Image (cartoon, rainbow, N blue to C red):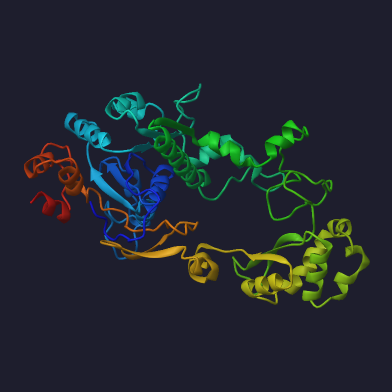
Length: 448
């Protein structure tokens, strides 16, 4: 089985075969990185139930007719995989998938607890097929406990985990996070736990069930807030201590809390252009950093006032301080301001949008964060590359997100030894494709 393109450089997970039952975001995001690290990932999907592919016009690039193969989100989330279209709820489909699992090392799924078990594909059943199988599951609440049957998505799990409460302005409703943070972070956790289980199997020959809950994982991302409650007896609160740009809000005690040292300046400041995203963050954590900033601003008279000589004074007069800094920051574009601050020993970073990160960030560009990959329908796309570097076994986007059922021939005939006649008959009996759905041209070709 050969991918579309393959680097000659060895991969960390070469020789590992993963059967991928994941959907939406968290699970597919995990197996995407397993594929980038060299695992052979076989995504098992059925066109009537593949949520991620049903993007419609809103998730399809302009000028392309929407179909199951045109979702930009799906293409990014499922890069580095093969696709097997298979109805695992049919008798023949369940027979085929069990044969495939018998030839594989890892099964990954992120359905609610007991979904795969109801299909006859729970961990206890799969151990009979392959005693050393690594079975990785991520549901909202895990496969044990009172709430294991509850269903959830990233944003709702985020609320229960405590992260939504911590985000927002004082005395305002909890804001939550703009993106489904627990899906992407959860995907990285799944990949991490999967590799730990693979290593354990390599050392002992034993497989295991890796059982994680998205909400429970989110509870660990609140930082030391739990310690602040259990050790200091202080409850998390947004009225005075929001997780925002300011280290201190007016009218509240100058208390060093679990977010770290309370300092000023510590804020986001508007920059030249005055557009929606023309901002730069500046934070001075020492007196020397403050003096560096004063010198960089040209030592204006307001900044030399004695009331700004200490962090206590700057906190007390923070409004005047921030107004003075913003008068200066508005004279520079955000990247220019960042460069000047960093050169002069002041911590500053531009506030970046998606466009900024993809088009204007030189560090991401030089680190190869976005890699061109050719897709048969979508054309040339820049996909996110791995955010880490391995000197000997690099992680590489070696394959576009698969067309649905694109790899049925290689998997069913090449790996499982099925005949051409058996393959063709599977398209007639609802095993490999719904009889009432039109076939794509590449599917007609593989049947022929």
